Amino acid sequence: MSGPPGARGRRTGLLLVLPALVPVVAVVGAALTSALLAALGLAPLVGEPRLTGAAFTAPADQLASAVPLSLAIAAAATAAAAAVGLALALAAVATARRSRLLGALSAATVPVPHLVGAAAMGLLLADAGFLPRLLGVAPEDWPALVGGRWWVAVVAEYAWKESAFVALVVGGVLASRSRSYGETAAVLGAGRWARFRTVTLPLAAPALGAASAISFVYVLGSYEVAALLGRAAPEPLPVLAVRLSTSIDLAARPQGAAVAVVTAGLALLAVVLALRALRRLAAWG
Amino acid sequence: MMTYGPATLTDLVADGTFPGTTRVLTLEEGTFGNASFLAVPSTSGDSAGALVVADLALSPEQQLAKADPATWGQFTVLDLDRLDPADRRGFEQLPASPVVPPYEELAANAQPELSAGWVTALDEGWRRAVLGG
Image 1 (cartoon, each protein chain N blue to C red):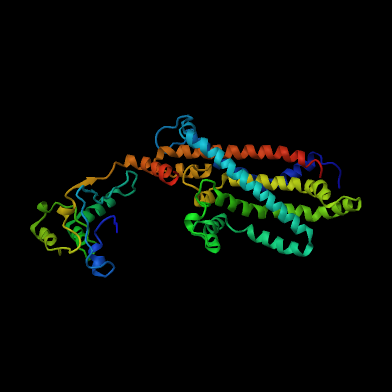
Image 2 (tube, rainbow over the protein chains, first blue to last red):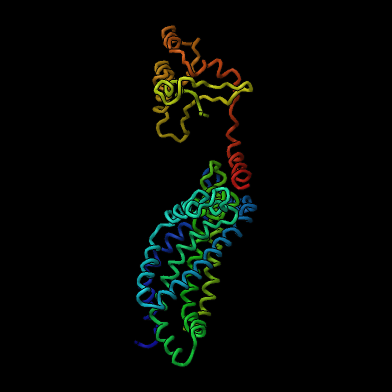
C-alpha cells in the first residue's frame, strides 16, 4: 500500500471511473432531460413551448393510486427476495458441496429475462395454469393470483428473479469472509444462533442492503412484469407512464413523461435513503 | 358468430369454412355502419402520389373488383346512377349472394359510429369499470 491517497491518487481514481461514468451520465442525463422537458411543456408535439405543471396535475388522481401501489409491490417483492436470497446464500455457504449446486441454480436464474419469467409465472399461477391443474383445483376455485387484487404473481416473479441476484451478491461476500469469523466465534463458545446474529448477519448486512436497494429501485421502475401479470386498474407507475405516452390522445404524452419523472424521483429518493442506511451498516465490516 | 363485416362470408361458405345454411342476421333496431376511407397525412412527403393511389382505389374497375365476392365482396361506395352505363352493368351483373343480403337491406337502418373523441373515454371506462372492477 502506498499510504493515504493524495490529490494525485484521487485524480487517477476519477480517470479510471470515467469510462463507466460518462456513458451512464450521458444516457440517463439525456433521457431524464428530455422527459423533464416534455413533462414541463417545453417540448410539445404541436404548438408553442410553454412552461406549465399541468402534466403533473392532470393525472393527479391516477398518481395517487399508482405511487402507493408501486411502492407496495417493490417493498413486498424486495422483502421476499431479501429473505429467500439470504436463506439461499446461507445454505450455499453452509456446505461446500451443496453450494455449487445452489450457486449454479441461482446463477441460472439471473440471465432469464423478466418477460420470459413473467410468461412462465403466468402459465404456472393462472387459474387455468399448471399449478391448479397439478393440484386438481377447478379454475373458479383458484384465487386470482394473476391479474387479481393483490398482485401476487407480479410480486412472486420479481421476488423469484431478485432472490437469485441477492443470493449471488450475499453469497459472494459470505463465502470469502464468514467462515474464519464463524470459526473464531465458535472457538470462543458462541452457539449457532449467536454466531448467526452477531457474525453472519452483520457480515451479510451491507451486501444484503445494497442488493435489496438495487432490487427495490429496479422493481419500482420495471414495466413488463406488471403489464403482463397485473390488473388493468389501478396501474403501477411504469404501466401508467407507458399507457399515457402511447395514448392516441397526443395531449396525454406530457403526462406520461411527468409520471416517468415522478418514478425517477421516487427511485432517486430510495437510493439516497438506502445509501444513508448502508453507510451506517458498513461501519462494522 | 359475430363479424366486423359480412364481406367475406360468401367466400367462406363457398369454400366450406361455414355451412351452407349460414345467413346474416339483420337487426330491427339497426346496426353500426361505416365505409372504408383513405386519408393522406398533412405531413406526407408525396401527397400527389398518394392522391393518385386514392383515385385508383375509387376507380370503377377497382371498386368492381373489390365488390366481387371472389375477390373480397365489399359493397362499393360509388353512386351507380353517376357511372357510365358500361361500368354500371358490371356492378349489376355481380352474382347475388345466397348468404349476404343486398346493400339496401343491410344499410336500411345503419347508424354512424361514435365520434373519434369518444375513443379514449370508452377505453378508460372499459379499463376501470370492466377490467379493474
